[in-house]
Length: 502
Ligand code: SAH
Image (cartoon, rainbow, N blue to C red; front, side):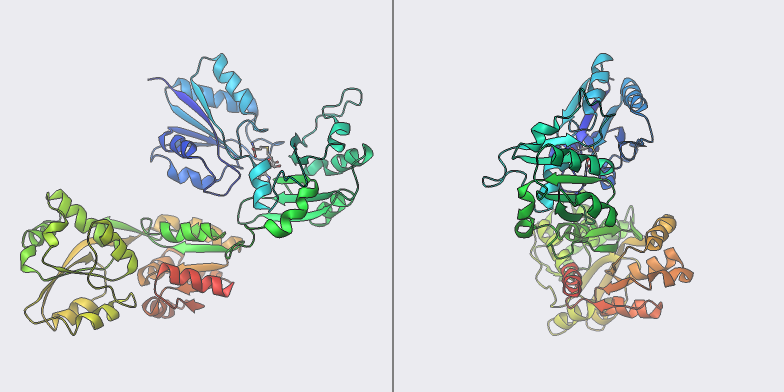
């Protein structure tokens, strides 16, 4: 087995600013070597047994010196492993990717480079600054601000040339040398009034942009306590920020929202928060344990012709049911004589993905509303099949049972995932969370169980958003104050409640 190294540009930080090829390299890696500028959420895409090696902080104080990083990468590849070296931005823009490549070539190790969106361009873009513009800048120059000792006779950087170009100047790693940078440009003839933007944590929810002029920028940076990672953009294009600032104008920009759902269900909420500019903090409180070798389910599927209704109450329930059909060599045609009911739009969508349009989807996505719709149409001769979670509420089964025959089959169980306690408490202690969302009673219960009643006061300054009345009631019973309940009991309903609030 021959190893291989992929030097992958992880982009400037926004989760979706990664190439398809980069994602593929993450998914197939045996080892991922990463540093602080690469969004660490990508690691979730890795294989289960992938090894993660963290190699560094800011440019000047590597946790591992570059030689050691080179060594680790080469050695792992020589063991026959696929090594993905994740670097912020583009690997060849001040990422020392060239040096890593040279080492690999000299040791005869197979390697490939996957370019990434450099912060020099993408970071400016998210700050509302186009790096070129027909009216303002016909070129751009990306410069390291990490200056080696200045040799006056033989300077590393041609300040005179930079000062006299009309192009946009972008300095990376320049915060510590900001005074020197601005002075050198002014001395060589650049106007003191030239606009400058300092862009920190570009493309992330915590992006911060400060604008100034070349003359004042050093003082401004000190006053505003600007820290790396920061881009310094110099030029007239900075003035376009007021008009083109699409990112910071997103409805959830700057908001940190804790999402408590089961691992398998949280992705749509997490993705929506991200797309709206917010920072989703995912805490899976529960995991889904499918009931294996479900003979009971198989038996009822064999007898499916006896039923007149099928009620599915969750996306997991749908998946498990249809997977079982598939396993038994059946498909949606087996359900041709049934009316299919979905309790929510996500459930209905999942059913649709399996080729069936649900006949009944209640106005509000709670059991009570589904029952209201079923009550007038169910006859005593009907027979209802309900494959669902073991710990689900009794309401529907009881109520339907008063009218006709109903068969409940447990197909999965939601169980608490206690391994998350420290992680969740850490996030709460940082005090940066604005909202916490609960999309079901069980997530409330599980969340409280995981953090412990004694830690409930840590939620004091966090706005609790509940998906609907049942979840709110459960929260109340557990002494958790609900700040707002969604108008519509869906994920989108929760999102719009947060948007209206913020
Ligand atoms: N290869 C990277 C740059 C690595 S050098 C790229 O192409 O973007 C590290 C410097 O890049 C930081 O000191 C900072 O100046 C800049 N940088 C990288 N990502 C950034 C971000 N999200 N926000 C602000 N600056 C960033």
